[in-house]
Length: 457
Image (cartoon, rainbow, N blue to C red):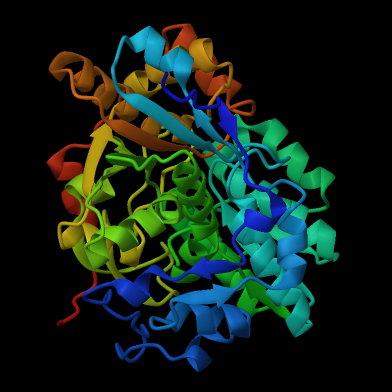
């Protein structure tokens, strides 16, 4: 008789990872270095100290240390909501009539409702240890801002959050949760910064973007004594912290004597995707296994599938270092009808390099199809997924259907990055039939490409 695999598997506290995994240590070729925008030379840790706290700057540039110890204070904090469960989606499999085995790693079991807390607590810990007086950040859909507000409240550090204006207007309750934890929330672009005023002068009706919000948050940080800026995705340090997702998932699957044929994650800036795939990508880089790894992004913000692999600013105001990544141009503004997060103009340099070198795939999906998958999943598994997570669900369902058609018994793992209980405006738009798809034209994208900085590499 075949062994019955449990619906949910949790690691014990003793089995939880004690180290983060640095994927760069096993990459055959390193991502191109960040460039100082003034000199166009590779940045040093000292270049980053005015913006980031010092330990995070060091982690950002460390490409050789394979495993980095998780400080005991952070391990203790993790124990409040980790380990997160690895769940076998039996009901989804049954509804799809697929021979595939579908697993998902659920990161929504904390107040922030997403994986973002994994890096937020680490970044605030290092800021507090350095003796900083406060932090600034940006947030799109609100998950990162919420997680950082929780972490700052825990360490009693003031926080200013620049929230993309369209999300600020669409998600008042996400804003309320951040305020509950003591954060100051400012819709971006705003009149509180020089960069924000300039953006509004050029386009008074702009709905904002993560690039705009990053510019304002960086300006606020560098102009306020004792403050630093923190970021919830894209950066090497964030993917490092998020590796705990994949490390837990791999250990849990080993306990079940399972290994994924396909690993799927949603992709905005790359934090959850990079964290989920990290140990499986390690196997691929070292020749131990060869899973298919699929990044799923919105068709309205298609940086992987339609972007350029080029050096670009990480923000709209062009004050950050230049990163070589897949980008739509730092001036790109997602359509106002774009629901949820995954609205950043670029992609993690680590993931961009891996994609460019052929180690992973990418697919873009329209948001009506994403919400179709979200509703179907919710009815089967009783979890209302975040719109971001539903991108991965969409492709996981599509891959499971292919298995039904071919009879292949593949094992699929996807990341359920969080819950969608603050996304009811978007769900209502889908259920009422008012949600529409927007796919930028080649001409739309070319406007951003034309403004890419000229960097000889």
